[in-house]
Length: 314
Image (cartoon, rainbow, N blue to C red; front, side, top):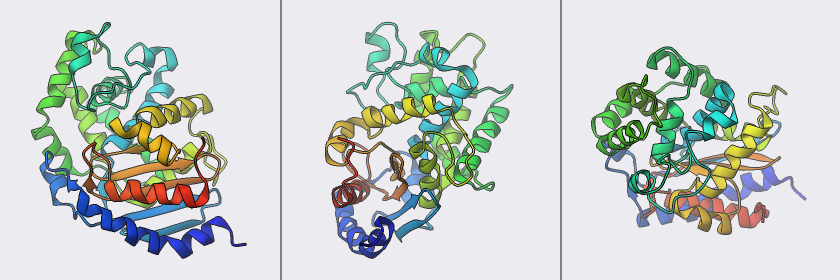
């Protein structure tokens, strides 16, 4: 019998084209003007194994911004910088049941801190915890961490997407001021400084190969299987993967856990980072989003592959 990665190579083009048909059901994110320029019909995937072997199909060279996928890695960096207790003093551990950019519970639920680090309010709070004397220094540390995880020293953020995001981020500014008023952001922290860091890490530009490489480190509990180097303590990766299961696909996280059964994190650019623990890191791009903000074609492709290869952890 062929190795799984060889079977993937044989079947991926067929599966990808079947999933690409689903893109017609979605729409490209338009509330950030630069994201609206993406092709609705684009779809690409890379699956990477522990030895660096990979299977790819579709628009694998397409560049896109990480958006909310970046939140997984800023959370890990915040844990490294501050430890578990300090991080959970600022964010909770629970799904919200609300939209990712909702401010409802910041006002209604005591103590007024974000329910988890993967919603926008939580990720803004996490951005405030990254060590550095200035926003530029914090951003440089984030970029260094992302570059190491992706094994690409040229990784950087898209200036156009960063500026587009900053210019239209009225809801995120409101969330940040709520956090300031609720004392989640301390007196010494300037709202615009935190948002500058947040917008830039969301605007980091990658392709599906980068995401697969970053996911591979999570699949092996923080140790890069290609080099043997521990990049993140195992405990912190366990927490991050738990959040990916419970909150990583916005309000469709439960449905994705049932249908695919693997940890994943999506972003409104249409990217999805997913992993099969101990086996694979996966990167997907499909800009057409469904009603809950996830790539329609990308989710379908991951569900198809999970069923074919029995990836579900449940």
